[in-house]
Length: 342
Ligand SMILES: NC(=O)c1ccc[n+]([C@@H]2O[C@H](COP(=O)([O-])OP(=O)(O)OC[C@H]3O[C@@H](n4cnc5c(N)ncnc54)[C@H](O)[C@@H]3O)[C@@H](O)[C@H]2O)c1
Figure 1 (cartoon, protein in one colour):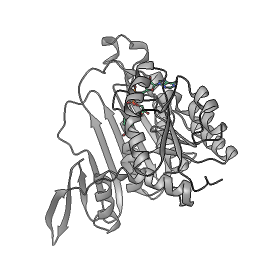
Figure 2: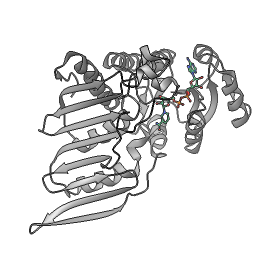
Figure 3: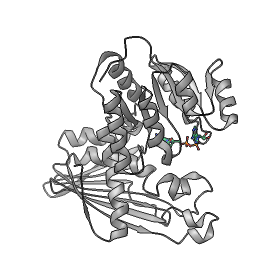
């Protein structure tokens, strides 16, 4: 891959949304590691006005094609709804720009393959904003796992959910979001793949649909009420991810990790590690170490300017998408499907 010369990296974002101010967040993070916020693209003029207030003098564009034609940005971060990540990333790569895509990288393995092919063809960097790779909860869990506190991990169970009608926004539309597994599910699988540290053999998927759909206006395009992915790994371990909008029970731990030497309950802020000594159960609880989301762009700038190894590669980011893609197909077919990418 061609390295950008050692000069500040000029950056642009596509998508400057108001929901979580993610465009502002990315540009601030990029600026904090020495990159130069240069351009913002959004189809919504009100969001371009917001960008101009946040970043006086910044270039603004109503379309990514216009930005790619007129702006001198070296790196573009795509922060738009999920269904357009692949096409926008490929357009940027074909225009000779390095690209970061917000999670989920895309909505199918085939889309990810096309993105990786475009990055290779154009000799440009492609990465995905897996900021939660540096969440305190997973950093803490991995510290215990690497120290052997859990022995050999053979089961990871993750659930997230609630009981509420879906909100009226693009995240509730299956054709735009990809479905219930694609938003937080990608973060949770990215944790799980670190914990399991093994190749994916096959995936079974389950989905329930139709409880909330009749109650919403977009009923023909509603996400699943609940969906599940069960992953079999090549070291004999397995993982279960369950995302639900029908879940009235909030008492279970967020992530349960079970190993030959211990059990671990991982919550966002706290942990509980249970082991046994001389037949007696010992539970150690504590607060997770601090997270470090800034590590993501630190690594990117080191990669682009110093040739350091990329932490979140496109191939790594393909794995959660591949699992969810297989789970969605499996739910329709009613049988487990083998993984193409381990
Ligand atoms: N990593 C994280 O912690 C995290 C947190 C929140 C959101 N996200 C991700 O960020 C992405 C965006 O989510 P959001 O919450 O900011 O959504 P949002 O709806 O607030 O913002 C999306 C923006 O994209 C713009 N847009 C839509 N189509 C466009 C197009 N063709 N060209 C240019 N702009 C276009 C919209 O006008 C809007 O301003 C999603 O992938 C989401 O999953 C990640």
